[in-house]
Amino acid sequence: MVGAVAILLAALLGSIPFGLVLTRAAGLGDVRSIGSGNIGATNVLRTCNKKLAAATLLLDMLKGAVAVWLAGWIAGPGWEPAAAVAAVLGHCYPPWLGFKGGKGMATALGVMLGLAWPIFVVSALTWLAAAKISKRSSVGSMSAIVVAPIAALIFSTPGAALGLLVLGADVVWRHKGNIQRLLAGTEPRIGEGK
Image 1 (tube, rainbow, N blue to C red):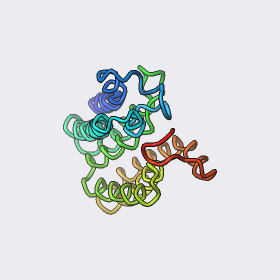
Image 2: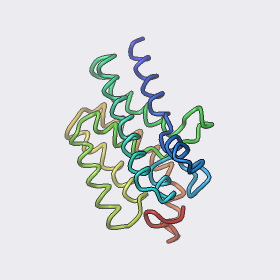
Image 3: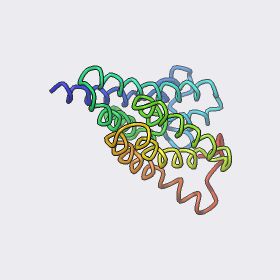
Image 4: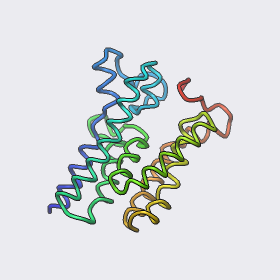
């Protein structure tokens, strides 16, 4: 019962749409009406407000990390991977937004930090390198989520690796439009287009 409460709390934390809340509070309207229509930091950056994009990134990461830490505190060791999955899926499919949320990468980075900081470091560095080389956030995101389960096997538990594998499948699937644009050569660079 306590574990179920921890998982529900993780999903609820994950479902807080910080990108939408921050852009509305700043008077920039509904971030879902521009660019990709996503509520994540990359789309918030398309409002040309770098501070709001950075705040969205940090808050989306924080909610993932807190969800994992709370699960361990409330339900005990072993519940963190399930909470990680719940938090990211909560972000991707928030019930208050018709189950249409972000792509989940910032929250995934947060849950990696909550699971074991070396997983976060490996994935964050992978994201930075891939995004810098390709100039595309989607390439960074997919690269980072693909290495995460491997890093979890080295630095954490098989349960964490399995949870990140599940999240990786969802995050990559949610990037299917980006993959099509990458193959077509039409994927916009960071801060451009949709």
